[in-house]
Image 1 (tube, rainbow, N blue to C red):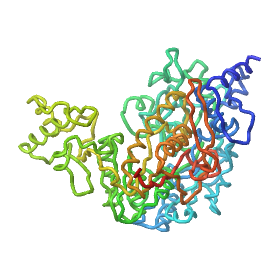
Image 2 (image 1 turned 180 degrees about the horizontal axis):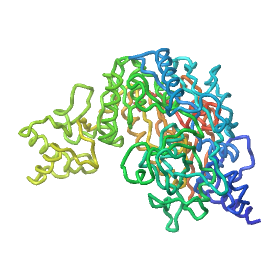
Image 3 (image 1 turned 90 degrees about the horizontal axis):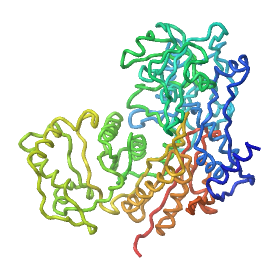
Length: 627
């Protein structure tokens, strides 16, 4: 009866949701904590395995269970804790071909599998028997075709996407950690973010090591597990463990029971225990036997390939960029979609890529340079200020270049001479201290800039804004763009990222935080609508499973801007969107899609046979804005 009362409480938490799905019995999805009272032998048989469970905020869990149906959400939640069992690689067709890249990758994989490289799992290993996954058989993935075996490389068969290459991994694998009642294995506990990277093919680097068994020496075999954040008595989240904690292999160890089912593999210690917590960087554990065998492509064929999730590549195709067009990529970092768009345009046209972070703009520039793409121009700009406000008409006119009203300014340039720098900084400071009233006019025509402020800004211009704020280097800052000045706009919006995988923690998100994400995205979309010309295209995408950031945004856009309409997408490999609505306890009704609209968007389900991240794409055509 107690269990039934808890379930009833969860169901009453949110109010009511209406969702058109086949399951009529709407109930909260419940994940039960593993009992710590199991018999010792049974406990150890399950302990050294990988079977994580995402612990959601109860209100969020209830909301998603109502949106998707309990069974489907349970499958999604499980899939999120696992990585995709293949790597998706986009070939830079400006420099290479799919066939050439496949040949090079096969040679790299062959060399690493025959030596001591980090791609294990090609062939049979008595300690790594392949187990049928609970989240589907990898061989059923329609992307795989006739390509079999871990380490196999295949070309994408989706029409128009033959430049995409898949490298197939395997997992989950059942690993023998060598446990004996009187001799437990030596262990290393890593942080959750480190573990998520290891599951994608990375090594264990020193900063990610949190705890270690006593007397670990270089060359020792260690079992690697993960410490996932737990909720503290103060309501905050943390692992409650001091870095450098000694593990004794007993039940008194921190996180002993919490680590049950959270072992991600076995590796070789690359340094002693003392070294693991003394040196600042380097590989701490060389992973030999992994639960999931996926190759790491760090520094592999730079400039020729780019590791990118398949739905992100599809989003660039949905934009359908044409040669000679002017395109805006809002929130463009790290530049994956930006460069994908440039390649689809054959590097002919103009792509404006913006991000509010100085360092991320540098990343975009670096990526474009590596791939030899010249049509990309990166600017530092907050997406919420993408539309030029024309604060000072004369200043804007003087600082605009010939690129269709892009108002920009140069910051952090080490090549500017000191005598010219002073006047530039003074003008910049005047602009920064201008205060606008509600009509967009200056509240005070006089602007005073002290000599101290000028000296301080001179130092910043000469030395950079500080090591904690910037990597240095030169970026162009933008004051915004003229309305209707872009043929196409891509808004890959910052989001809750609840579709990224593998994900071992999701407890911090609440219903309120999810709703706040949606409010922020609507404000960015308002900017995108103003910048796209009539007859143009807007593509909106996120990497979250939250309908409040996906279908609810589409509903908002179509209801507010009557000249917007959903357009078909090519290629279409994702599933339909969610139709219905959700009413919260405070009376707020979150409207999703209406019947007939669901097949005009693409929703990528991480539990589907495609085995992708959770992702959402909507494409809008901009009609006449007159009237």
